[in-house]
Length: 194
Image 1 (cartoon, rainbow, N blue to C red):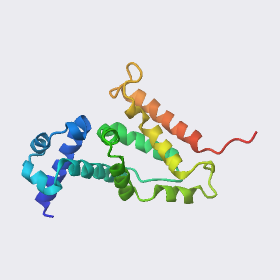
Image 2: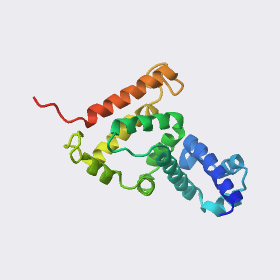
Image 3: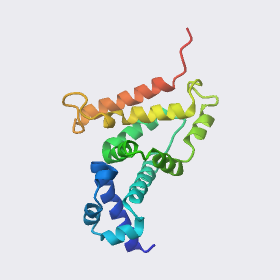
Image 4: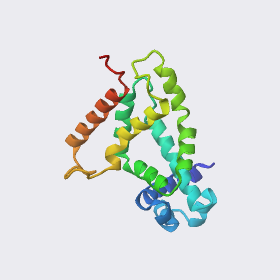
């Protein structure tokens, strides 16, 4: 693809991410995405076919950005949880897009995109668990799911407490990150013998 075509696609992805994060698949408007991307609707349809295909492609791009920004570290799950927290705090639209995908019944597409972009975290984690200090009672998929839930919990529940919404300030973000890492440490630690 020529560089001007690649630049247009990236503008479309950025505009689509903002539009889908704000309005979901059903509420998003292709004309707003095209206008924000400085591209014609015809060009957008030529690249992606239809709105749903653009939505799925944008989710895949989100996972690519996440995988690039946060390498999976199965030997340091608390550190990974902290890095995921940092990413979704800096890029809340990524978490909102995934929420919209689940709400609109696109969970299978999310799972497929995640598998393509992230590889097999479960297998990597299973290998890391052998002879490690990770509680061996966990199934890998359960543990990964809970690590992501911990890391994205604040973004999924903004404003749960008065004065602590998305614009809560650096001190609150630091405290939340410490709580995510501490909870992940407790989650992966083996049980203490009685």
